[in-house]
Length: 328
Image (cartoon, rainbow, N blue to C red; front, side):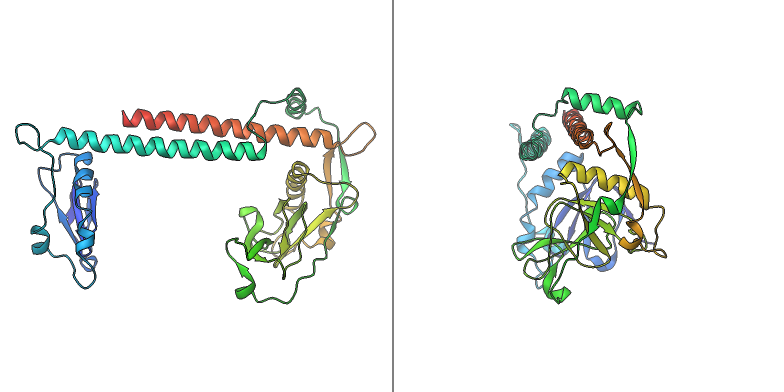
């Protein structure tokens, strides 16, 4: 049985990489790692300070010049001393604490800047609900919405996108860039149905559409809003409004309602093809004249977005306070 080494120790591998280990651990012999202990490693912060002083070791050793115990014993590190010439443990602890606090502040500030930039770009720098949004939320919460059932084939039609003959290895990529700029829907569960990105000159595309996954052991019947230009790879298709113009908010609402309607009906054995899905009917908010109430849909989704952003801001604030309390 492999030996268990105690925590609060330092390991150094053959390439000079040093790590502080706060927990007990085992060393596999083929990993070529050495364990070092000593009274100088009084706690985690001291261990982290010492490891930082050992960072230069990785420049001394390599595959053709591996570290060994005798070689490591010949290496030296700088350690701070107090006025009496004793090891200054307080300085090491305070220095690591300062670095931790500085890094946490840096990360928090970066996250806040990113969030603020996103909110500004998305138009959500002000997340206060309007009177209309509050009223619509109240209507939903009190089941006071007038609903009407609409047949999908009267609202949407499947797009017949024409792709050139393509080579998946050459014409698609798992991440977007200037060459592979078109998101491609597929039998994908999660990530908004996008698994690959294609060349603009190869894949036909459209915007303000809804993506329905027609095949897949898990993903069949998944429905995603695709406001951006999107193409089709395999096992999914795009539908687009016939007699109305969707917005991003209405797409999100429609996608949720459609998925809630069809997800339990279709499966891997019973594909969610448009020839089947188009005969399904979905409930939507309706006006007194029986038309789809897009005003309510817009206000509801806008309110949900704002409440989500508010929750995110509150979470970040709580997390920030938690970090501060830990580092004190």
